[in-house]
Length: 590
Image (cartoon, rainbow, N blue to C red):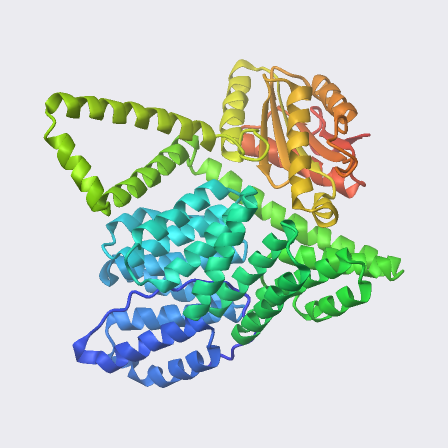
């Protein structure tokens, strides 16, 4: 084994299902110790331990070799070698039928983590689905929890916070009464992140605080540090004390420095610089951003690197270095566009895979039903007494109660299905429901040789709105934009939030000229009835494509998405259409 650990660029989860083997107890103990050291981020000790174990591999069992390979895979991942890491995991999965479901599940979830963190969502999705299918067959609750944690992380990253919260709750309920510190730490952190994305900032603050404390006890320095960053961000939105915010960020830096976790260091420095800029302390912000230059080119989150570059561009501009500021801004936009393109690809993959709204609603219902069953199974004595009383009250009373419960459950499920179709912030349909309805309209138009137009819109420089005015104002802007879209396009249009600041419109029985007229109406009413002067005026860029000979919705979407990018590159605040005569050349509309 000849791994030389460098800065870690991957937030991974290896949750332990520690087996025992009396014949090879010493080797098992050393493997378990290495797994625990890996969670703590003690990379040097892990490498030394792997080197020491290597001579004993000839006599190791298949399960022992597999677990050692997964430790090596994690090490390869955190040393910026995701391809080599995935290859090692695939080697383990080739023996999956002989390994047992718990170890197979661990390999699948590790593969998902490596790929999703590096924003290779489409590949990660395949392993993610396999893990979810396998999880119910695993008897150990802590091993099953690994799959739910990956599901929470996955749905959180693709912009589905409600589903992420459901999965995190599933972990916390299923592990109730068990020690299981590591999965509880991860579940609290992921639920906090999902609450923050959903706009539940006070809930996010409470969960981040609990996660920081729980993860520090293990210790899992990566999750502890990331939880402190999340807590600082939440406190900033809630107008918390600047001293406490900076204290949390400096503690996060210390955690991530000990774990050698580059993305955590990058994020903490970005938040410190953002706070300094908000206070007008340009030079202090520059000092916080100075170390990030060496981290930008590392493998990791494009979105996080875009944030760092945007702030560095702002500092350069305030220092009077316009040329440098422009170059940094271009680089930031490229990073953001890479992140957005990866998310779009994943959402299309979800659509094409058949994970439609009906399946999603069923998935949520199943999670809630399981959560309720676990709560009931762990009920207190009072619940037992109530159940006994009802059992003795006769068949009529029991039948009446059953009827009421079935009726209430049916009504709740209907309500959950309706909620699952909507974006919680804007009230528009969510991206899954949007693509489902748009696909139906697209197919009808093709079959009937009718008209169909797809519009992809993006609020210009929305990240700066959040940075300058705060996330609460950003949320108000998104709600206002959603309302203006409905006003301009009418209830007959399908209008959905595709994620972040991106909105889609599907128009059936509508030609290109009519669609452009509606866009101009939207642009005219866009900034009317702002709540007050604190809510900024905004502009939007549009990409528009009309059905011509495309055989699938994703082909039409690709045309509209390309037109949107052209609108952004041309200076924003404009409409770019894909001509129905020649789809190869975009047409600019101001």
